[in-house]
Length: 195
Ligand SMILES: C[S@@+](CC[C@H](N)C(=O)[O-])C[C@H]1O[C@@H](n2cnc3c(N)ncnc32)[C@H](O)[C@@H]1O
Image 1 (cartoon, rainbow, N blue to C red):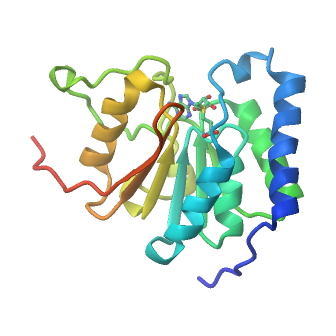
Image 2 (cartoon, rainbow, N blue to C red):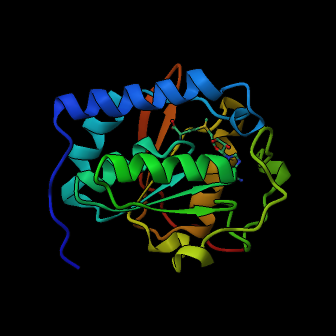
């Protein structure tokens, strides 16, 4: 499907980031914001722009206020976000509308139903919610359909996030990770044999 290429300009980007910061200032005491921390949006926007020629479908895991999925949508990606907290999904949809972006947000878990971790390989969730249903059906997509997946895991969850990509994504799926100390890293995993 043809999507128009209309990236947010510098002023609009500042406006989007400020709008998200304002929501955080007003609402961070609410339970929905318990696990929400925002990443370095400027660095992510630059990286998403540079990857645009290599990827079309984009997914933000744990999309929170949806800022990254919104930026991706305006860069011309077919953009999606999955977030477990319904209040955050509502806020993300409102922000998307305000910034003329068309990402699709789904409420539920980004962990695919078929994923089972391997404790011996360090697969352990710490702060990721594990009780909710996987949300891929809601967007009629599977993890393997995405060219580029972005996440901001807690440091102790780097291993299990990579495992999900290795086991459930396509061999061509690129994984962009943000870490507060290490910044952004991009990996394209080779498929492992399933056990
Ligand atoms: C560290 S914040 C990242 C927010 C945003 N992606 C960013 O980079 O600025 C992690 C988000 O993941 C959400 N989350 C936690 N467990 C989840 C799950 N199983 N499925 C979907 N979202 C989840 C939290 O509610 C929170 O909004």
